[in-house]
Figure 1 (cartoon, rainbow, N blue to C red):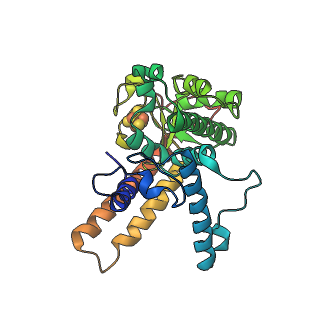
Figure 2 (figure 1 turned 90 degrees about the vertical axis):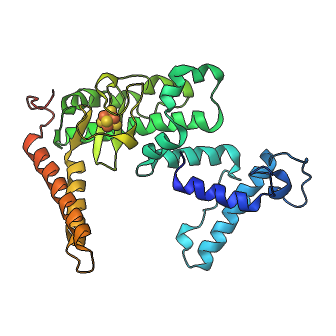
Figure 3 (figure 1 turned 180 degrees about the horizontal axis):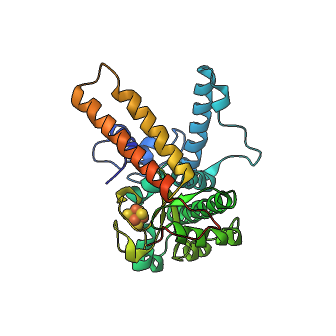
Length: 294
Ligand code: SF4
């Protein structure tokens, strides 16, 4: 399974490639003055050149459209190069809204793959970077949770107490994840696996034995089940639910919508409000007696 931007990119590459040729055929993608071996994919130098050419083209386009602020800024460290481009890519995959969901779909279940023996086969390049960025994103989630709880943000749902117990560990590894081994240790530590899931607006405090989406070593955030015992929800998630409900309610009132669709939107808005009400009723704070844990 591939996410839509990847499918689009592959379709474009297929149009560029010669019949039966490689998607990144050097004969097609290398610069005209660079020699290319027949039936070989584009090499590191070619890729580096393409990355710089893309940055130049994107900056020129943004300036032509009057969006100067979106141009790729001059870099004090020189050319972007392959390694930095891959690090940037991994950062965006894991940090963009829903990024971990995309990651789960696109690259399969990383931690499961590692525990199933992939680690011994060696995981380099983008895969290691993705693991490192996923571990950093997890650490950031825990740090944000720790700050929120310290500032009296409420939390509810079955995993609320586990989230409260886990959050104080955030300061011990924030900023310390530099190697793949460190990432591996964090992602493999069941006490630290807290994932923000921005689509259903909740947090997964992962415990394999309680997971409804998956029973291996990592959650499938894209298959999150609302009745799972690993769910925790904070006041921030609930504010998001209410904002979504308000938008849906507004849409459902449009005269141009067919009746069944308007009813569906209104029903979804009511469901979101019910979730928010439930949070309001059940929420606990850091120093209160904990009542919502199963
Ligand atoms: S179903 Fe449970 S374990 Fe799976 S992503 Fe949702 S909260 Fe996490």
